[in-house]
Amino acid sequence: MAQDLATRPVTAATLRAAIYARISREDEGNVDNTDIQVDECQDYIERMGWECVGVYVDDNRSAYSGRRRNRYEALLGDIQANKNDIIVCVEMSRLNRRLWYSIDLFRMAETTSLAHIATTDGGGLNLSTPEGIQNAIKLAMEQRTSPGGPASE
Image 1 (tube, rainbow, N blue to C red):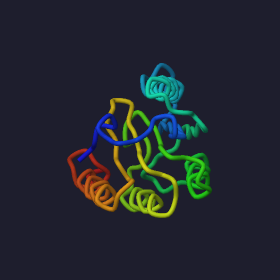
Image 2: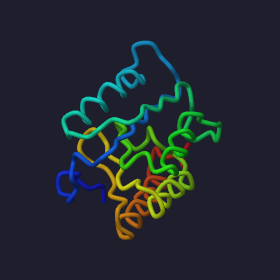
Image 3: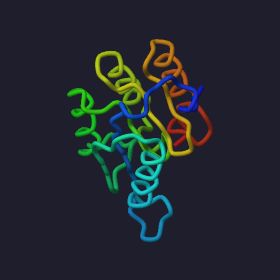
Image 4: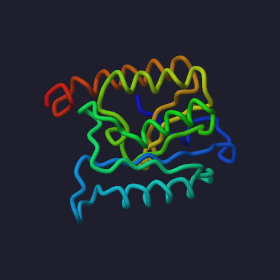
């Protein structure tokens, strides 16, 4: 269900990309630290020819605990203000681990300029059509019940 951005009819120059990076625990030397995530996302945005319009980083914030993620909330505010067309992250689990948060984000695509969520491996979710939003919700539900997912924690 994740789709390759290269197969979508999108004009790269029109995309305003926002980077989201998160780590639950800031461990020195951890390959998943947020500086590495941001660098990887910036490289990906540059390769795609998009414009980076914001970087949102939540250090030491679980995406499952329900604790406030201030930068994630700022990202949502900018999406509601139609400042972003695409969110870029290294993997979907950096963005959300709670089903309802994911669904709320996907639904925002119905009324804002948010059209895609991209991962730096070239995958992601197309939120530009009702079918794409349905597929994104279905994927979020599958991840919720997969081994090692939040339901198994």
